[in-house]
Length: 531
Ligand code: GLN
Image 1 (cartoon, rainbow, N blue to C red):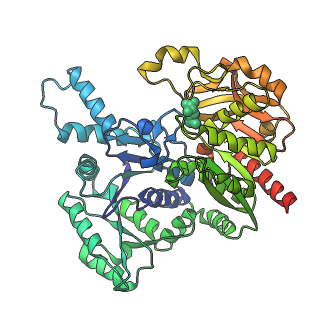
Image 2: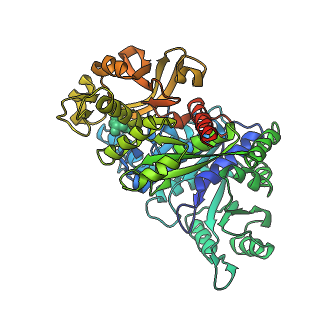
Image 3: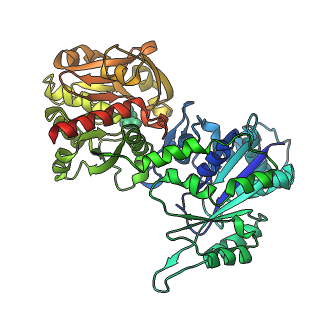
């Protein structure tokens, strides 16, 4: 029988349900089980592709080219799995599928309703992925009590009916706020939110309590009593320094043993030691390095989630604590911070705002010989910078920013132009690249055939490759089938690499991405030679 764990959230959003779910998944995996994870998003958008990173955080891209919720990034990083588009189920995609079937007449004249048609579609999405997995963890976005998430919660409730109580359990993540004036942690919001969940017909098996402080014994007793769960099923989840400490904190309270018992599964192995050795190592990093992220979405840190995690992982691999300076390139005073950082990273982005500031940051990295990593738009800006300042093409630009530029060094492909107005013109998902031997990229990867995920519309215009090569910016990686430039490097600079892809999506805590690892290593070198 397939086994399911549903994760719901109560009281407020942003409780880190994704991290709690991924941590539970990690624990089950360390017990030798094959775990899959699904995220349900109650919004009407069909996918996260059109959503503003300022509001919703980063769009996480999977190998199969789906634009998904950033929680899938946590699943991939914690579990080391490669998710696909089907791991993210949105209200928009569910309704779209049901309405399309209705138009095709597949419901044979029936009145199409939320129950059973929408809930059946939701359940079939879950069940389509369960094969070959011992446990599927489904996280339901939003907060219990919202109108939007009701069909997902109803589907979760029905799953227990369908599969039997021994095969489906529920974990509710809530907030236990600390009230300063009373010097007390308060359980009332948790009680209310569990009641709300019960009204929908879901009895939680576990309550994970997010709080800024440790829960004293009395608090756990109270929650257990009022929410009628066993005391050991009330799990404390207080804020920790590192998200990678969460699995251990949950494990110490016996969550995985209890979950396995409730689901009637036996652990196949115990692989905890290796993971604990890793987390212990991350707490004793010897070196320090400061990296500037020169972007424009800096107010919401979640906009660069995978990127910052990739840098943290690269720090782990280099025995270094990475301090990140988020720099708003539109701030006229940002140059000082850029100068003080050991390396400069220009991340991806869309639209024309901030481009000139990013280009200025790259000029600085080039002139000061500071290690530079340009990601997607960051690579495109490096090409524009070199075109203007090394090849003498004044006014060179991307046609995304300046459609009428005389020197379109970054341009949309001809075949893409034709379909631009119909949408869907992005290069999305995994593409291969072939690297020139002996280059920084080839050295970092340790091979010359690679695959990375993409999410962009514009490309380095091949017409300018030769000219820029002569000026000092060399193409060191290409997508062979279409001869598209994928990676650029600057001659005569210690470490200057721009990539058209988003390598950050594939970094893992215990296996830092090679390019980020090499970048941080170069930053450490720059720091020690400056000292
Ligand atoms: N806006 C650029 C493009 O569409 C870069 C995209 C990105 O950085 N992800 O090509």
